[in-house]
Image 1 (tube, rainbow, N blue to C red):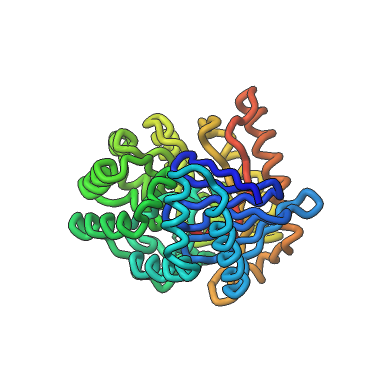
Image 2 (cartoon, protein in one colour; image 1 turned 120 degrees about the vertical axis):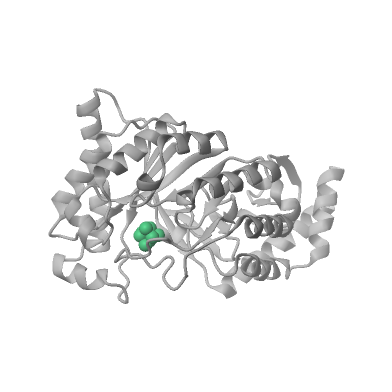
Length: 383
Ligand code: SF4
């Protein structure tokens, strides 16, 4: 086996003539493993996502723990085999370090992960699979949306400065040499930007002191605009915040009521405008399927209308995520009343929504929307 190795941006890549590609951090955490036409992504919680393209369509599934273990072992065997072949001394040293840990490392690492974070991390945006995740707050301040099960059962809490310093130090120790592979910090959980500005400033300063990385975060579009001024946003932009992700879900007031998400759409729009002025880009998340059959047109029209009025550029992104309906949550009952869309109908609505967003933007602004409109599937969004 002839092996090629490359260290780039703190990531080790191993490949060969058979087309196998394995990306690892310097501690041996598998990032991406591609072999035999299938790509696997390992999450920090040691779950593996299998990514295949069938008839040009992206197909993703979360593998069971047994299959995941086999993928991890296969990656480990590949590392061992590569160690015999690589010439580069610095790569050899990293491979020695990984091989010495043994194949159980990946499972043990996931257990340490759960200890450090006090549980699992339910979600990150699709362009944030490999950040350093830090929790300035735990859970969701609002936690009442009828469709959302992300932080149910998690009590909302705020880390004080000492707790945050300790948390950051634990996280740094956990990542070890693997820190070099991380391109940013994701500040969780659901809405840490609403923290009191003094506390937020303290956390951001510490992040820059310790990690010097750009910061990304979810914001809830219910509370954030009530507690953050344009000056606050400017300050956090200067302290490294690069993009905020807003769960808008819909531009329809009627559908927002069904979701129990009391967003004042005009002030959510102002928040986005202020963020953009402050140099913070935005990721806007919309839900295909929200409002069911009854509000199908209203949801699509009003969402596209809302987005077409925003000053978006190529640094921003609009996500369309399929709505998952959980029987244990209040939205299940609502969806019976409004007529639930099938998965196929949701996919169709996502296509219509994307096209209408682009069309309305073009008509209103006389130019193409430069922000990409991309899919966002909760299944894939595991950290
Ligand atoms: S959708 Fe967002 S704001 Fe609503 S409960 Fe879930 S995390 Fe909180």
